[in-house]
Structures are given as C-alpha cells and as structure tokens.
Image (cartoon, rainbow over all chains, first blue to last red):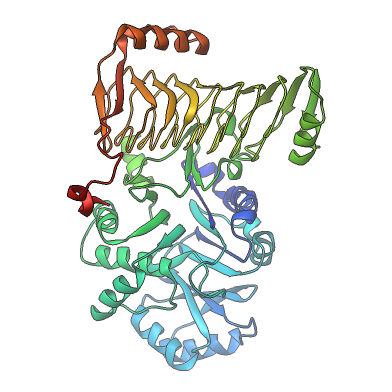
Length: 305
Length: 225
C-alpha cells in the first residue's frame, strides 16, 4: 500500500514551518504505511560549496565524534556535523566518490541516506508519528519536502529499505505502488556500473531516473523514459534541488491528489493528508492524470514573476 | 435534524447512528469530515444526509433509499455498489464513481476522475464537468452522462450501459463505438438530465455503446486476450 506526501512552498515566509506542515501530512498516512517512515527535506545550504551527507547508523550506536576525527584526517579540514537520533548530517567538501569509498571501507555499518547541498533524508522503521518525533521533523526548515509511510510488500523492513531514496546529488524519490520489472532493470543498471544499497523496487526507480539524468536528460525527459522502462503501478513524488515533481503510471490505479494555493503546492496519496494545510479551503484540488509529468520549480516561478 | 461533528465523534459512531435511525426519514448533518473514509455507508432508509466538507474513499457505498449530499470533494469509490437513492457531490470526485452500482442516481457537479462508472450495473451517473480515462470500463447497464469531455479509453469493454457525452471524447476504448441518438434515447436522456437538475438538453449529446464484438470468444482475437 504505502502513503506518500509532498509539500513545495511557493511563499518563502513559510520555510520556517516546512516540517511543522509536513508532520501532520505524514502522520495522517499512518494507516497506509505503519511499518516505516521517512522524509527528504530541502533545507539551508552549507557555506563554501560544501555538501550535506546524511548518514544513518544501523543500530543507532555510532561513534560520531570518532567518525568526525577520521574524516578530518582524511580530508585535512575541519568537519562539522549534527546528530538527529540515529542519523547524523556531516558538512563536508564535495569529494563524493572519495567519501563513499572511505565509508564503505571503514564504516560498512553506516548507510548514506542523502547527499546534496540542500537535501537531508531521515528514515527508519516504526510508526510515522514516532519516526517524525525521533528526528524532530516538526522543527525542520526548508523550501520543499517529500515523505513516505511504508507498508512493505516486496522487500525487507529496515531503515535501508525505507523511502525516500536519494540516487544523486539533491535527488530524492518516494513511491506509492509496486514495480514488476525491477529485477530486470536493476540488472541492466548494474551492467552499466550503477550500485545499489538494497533490493528494494523503489530504489531501482530512483537509480534509473538518476542514471538518465546523468546521461544529460532533463528531469521531464528522464521521467518520460521511466514511463517507457518501468512496469508496474506507481505514483512517484520526486524532489530535486530546485523543485518537486509528481508522476503516475499510464493506468493510474495508485492514488494521488494535488492541491495548490498561492503559497504552496501539496500532493498526497489521499486528500485527508492535506486537510490540515492552511488555506486548503480555497485550494485548487485535482487528481493528476496518468503518464503526465507535473512539476514546480523555484527558478521557474521566479522567472514567471 | 441531527448533527454529528467528526472532530468529536468517530466515523463508526456516525454510521452506527445512521443505521440505527429506523425507517422513518430523518435529516442528518455531518460536520468536519476532513476527507475521512466510508462516510454514510450502507444506509437502508430514505434519510437525508448532508456532509459539510470533503469526503474520503467509498462515501455513500451500498446506499439504499438515502439522499446524500457532499458539500465538497470526494475520494475514490463514491457510491460504490449503490442500490437506490441519490448521491450528489458539489465538488469533484476521484476515481471509480459508482463502481458496480445497481441503481439510484449519482450527480457530480464538478469533474469525476478515471474509471467513472466502472462495471456499473444499472445506476445512473451524471457528471456536470468532465470524466477521466477509462470511464465506463466494463459498464453493464445504466446511464453514464458526461456534460463536459471524456478522456481516453471511454467505454472500454463496455456491455449494455449507455454513455452520453456532450463535449469531446479522447480515443474510445476497445469495443466502444458512437451510436445513433434515436428519439427514445433523447427522451430517456432528457428525463435523466431533469432528475439530475442539469439545464442541458439531450440534443447536444452524442451516444456511445458497445459494438458487441468482445462478447464471445473469437479465435481470431486470441492474441488480444
């Protein structure tokens, strides 16, 4: 089953309330996905062109200070980080490949949930309300976010198997549905050198789209490619550095509802997740059409203004 | 009139109250529905129920006799398996309006999403706006009236239901064809439009139905099954 939510703020005055607005949306989707939950938040950028690396410690017992010391030695620079429950966000130089290699070799128990200049991803097993509280979602700030409540149907229940999936810098994806050809697509991507963190079907979609983006396709074109390549039932909500997109498969049997006001755009698996948003009474509410890309970006909005 | 506020009462209390209300018609008002599911389902008497806000999935399912109005939008499966009575939605409805409905009338004053009237078996559905893709899928009996446009695959695998569309249609579904509007159809459609409170005349509509080529197994179609 699963539930997905997304919130894209048009009005920057709401940025301080992003987590506060997203929390009830996520919690309202508990019945659709009570086994795990997660969210991708696009927040403030670190200085000096550094990136945020969100790391998840499998058992919650990671020695973050000693990891920070190791990283300082490796990178020969001062390292800042902050901890949220069993996750920590490290502010590091953009030496992504070197850091991935180092963590895989020296801290194989750690899982990188997100890399980006804005993106942080927090995800874990448990009821959505508990996961949101553990990570302090209510107080998070940012310009947009997507979230997921999981009822696992095709792979194990763990933090690693939870959504959102980050498959490229500032790129995140959540999925309501199931893919039927994920094994074949995963094999093809592996042959092309793509690596996977889990055997989850949604990770395949996230990596496929990121792979197409890496080939120079625009987000819109990469999503059109996904419609041709990915077989199954899906509604995707996608986050990127500047924007937010929604895509349903060509049968569109998995639910999705969109709502828009002058201040925000929101999506959810069900309307009730949107019912508490400010101004929902005046919002334009509609169901996205099948095989149609819906997207919003801050840059586009600035150009239009 | 009885009022139930879903900020303070549960959906179960609402439905139990409606079921226990007896056969004599009563007026009910439901406040703060917030898109909750299964509101006013399984009614068996001619109560008048007003849902003051947005409803979630399966609102008014299995309705008999009752007259339900949703003053907002509606989630999927509105009036699923409706037997009789009337359901009216003042906003839009999500997919599968009136799924497998046997009788009664459903009126959507906004748009309805995909698969409107899927497998309908006698219900009349009138949509003032447009309907999404695959509406009238496997529709067996009853009338689906669309005052706006119909998206692709209208009437796919349709049996003997009648579809009337006033606006444009996308690609028609498998075995669905446009059919002649005879005086009998004009009279019947005018009656439905009047019952639904729509100001349109039947003359502006086109009729669609089954080409009846998928009814029986045909070896020449084996590759399509």
